[in-house]
Amino acid sequence: MSSSVIWYLKEFVRAEWLRKFFFAKTAPLETPAHFRGFPQTTENECTHCFACKMICPSPGAIDVLQEGDTWAPRIYLGHCIRCGLCVEACPEDVLTTGRLLEVQKIDQTSYVSAFHVMIDTVLCKRCGNCSVACPVNKEIDPYLAGTGTASSEEVIMRIIRGEMRVIHPEKCTGCKTCEESCPNHAIRVARVVQGVHGPKGPQGALGGGEAPVLEEGGEERS
Amino acid sequence: MSILQDLKNTVRSKSIHVCYVNVGSCNGCDIEILACLAPRYDIEQYGIYVHNNPREADVLLITGAFSPQWEDKLMGLWEKIPEPKVAVAIGNCPISGCVFNREGSYLDPPVRKHIPIAAEIPGCPPRPTEIIQTILTLAPVIFRDYEGGAS
Image (cartoon, each protein chain N blue to C red):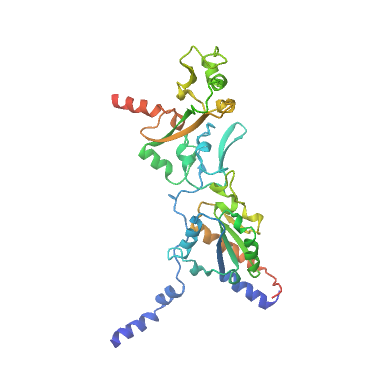
């Protein structure tokens, strides 16, 4: 017993033990490189598609600004929550943070977005304003009548048998002109983003809702 | 500046007493402050001590986007802290309101409108590393040249 006490006393006067006891410090506070920080811009050129700005969950955290001839996203500290969604949503890989881009490449994940057009049949009074105001409809069928009736089947929405029907929602560009022209606020346009697994298409995150299905089909055939 | 005041300032910058207050945070930033106390970061090894009483503190850590209940209370709390004192806003909420600053919300960010803020740490939440580094770089600057008030 006494020998163990002596061992302890000897241990306590050892210079290294004393140094460790009085000057204990953890390792320097360094953030590992793989941690998700505030997104940084890469060498890639920004095409100002605003996919990053549309997916950002925090108000005022990201803006895509024009500087001379080039566009570049800018992150605002104090607003950005470092979720990394802008990095994942960008089709051109303009932004990067941590290992997010590498992981996305390995996992072959990406986002596709589509615009959904919904009409509340109770509020809708079948005036046809939305169908007439729609700039895409005007492009497809310039003879669209003031009542929203059209001879073309290719328009986004038109009056069919007295009911406003959405025929081709995938053509919607999300301009929301229809929402503004609706007197009853019956029509709503929503951007729906979907996470998809598979090789990234040429359109990337901007591709239509149909894009991933077509890509998968092509992969199976080849 | 007297030698005594000089000595006081040196001691103050080596032992920093902080007090934290949540003015409407989601608790995420408070958990990061809690992580600073835990053995991994262990802020006491840097001479930072946490109190729950503003009268014992020099540094006030503020989290949250300033809910209406704090209108009259935060200033009172700030005045209770003895000089020299400094306030640090932790996280996005005291800076901008972050995701809570929506239309129709009753929040009133930024907190620097209500009390003077010396430093702001962005992040949702900021890392414990960033919190500790901010306090460590700020405290000596604040306490170094303090002339001493009515004590």
